Each structure stands twice: as structure tokens, then as C-alpha cells.
Length: 277
Picture (cartoon, rainbow, N blue to C red):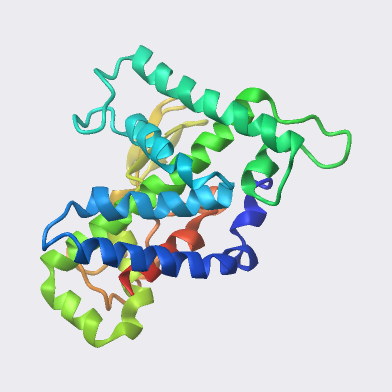
């Protein structure tokens, strides 16, 4: 986390504003040229954030289609439009091997010719500070590439597609946002609350405990529902109402919490603001 964080700080992200505006213009042009109907998820929401995160990684635009295919195959195991074949453990292993083959070449190149991109930071990363710190192992290096390439776009594309659907299904909220564009920042928080792009994580209880009257034994798996938290009636009044004026929409927990808070949170917000503006 410490290794990649500088690429996601405000000073670094400010340099992406022009690129985001360009991608937003391209998205609008794609929709205008579609003749009144298109698959927004496939044609706009998927490629937009992928172009952004791969630019941060420093990968050539010619490779974007390959990355899109691999990431969607990895996440779309049960989706007949995306899966490579029946998603057996062997098939998933083949996808990961494709990732490893691609990023192994990137690692060799960036160690020989480092630049100022995130791929160079990962390729030359070390476990700790100081010249004596050991380098990242091969699996850690490849794993870092994969999680950045996938988490950096799959979640944001889900928020984009889900946000547009919410506005379509709630036309009064769309009109309100059109009439009062100053609500955009709050609307993005409501979109993030509504879509909850990361649905859940699993955790293992380290001690016996009790939570709201429910006993949880040490060693038991605990299902953390981010969607459930974002629809918690104890925090959000009428949580099943999509409301771009919701006063506490920024209390959504779609980016996690504490030391695991998503380091790409501000980037995701910037992308969503640019496109919906």
C-alpha cells in the first residue's frame, strides 16, 4: 500500500484532469454516434476507468483491449458473455497465467528502463525502507499488478453503470441534478452508496465475541456486506430511496474503512464526476 500510494495522492491525480475530460468527451461521442441505443456498461463504463488506471500504470494503449478481456474473464466467471469457457479452476489458472506472462515482461522492462509510472514503482518495489530492504517477490509483484489493473477499473465501471441506471429509473432525481449541477458531488456519494460496487468481504474472527446479540466463535467466517451497510436504516433515513440531496450520503462505506480504506477512492470520485458532469 505504501509503495503505490504516491500515485493516488491529490498532487498526482491533478495531472489526470485533462485525460478524464478527454475520456468523458469520448464517452459522450460514443453515445451520440450510437443512434439512440447502446450497451452503456460495455461501450462506456468498462473502457473509461480501464484507460485511466492503465495510464497510471504506464501501459501502452495498444494493450488496453487485452487487459479488458483478461480482467473481465477473471471477474465474469459466471457471465456467459465474458467467460472464456466453463470456469473451472484450470480455466481461472490459465487466465492468471496470461496475466503473469504479460506483467513479467513489464517487470523486466521497468527494471531495465524505469520511468515515473506505477508499473516502475511495483517492478522495483522493496519490502521496507532503506537500501538493504529485500525486493518484492515475483508473486507479490505480479499480484500487485493484477489487483491494481482489476480493482482500479472493475469497481468504478460498476458505479458508472449503476449510477446511470439509478438516474434513468428515478427521472425526478435526474431532472433535479440537471437543474442544480452543484449537487453533483453529493450525487456521486449517493451513487456510491446505492451501487456499493464492492459487495462483500469475508473475514475470520480471531476471538470469541458477540455482535448485536449474535455469538461469533473464534475461527468462524464473517460475511461483511458493504451493500447492507449502505442500506442501514439506523444511519440512512428511508435507505431504499435514491436521493441526490441525501444529507449524509458521504457516510457510505463503499471504499471500506480504516487502514484498508481504498487508496483509489479520490480517483474513482474524479472519474464519476467527470463523466456525469
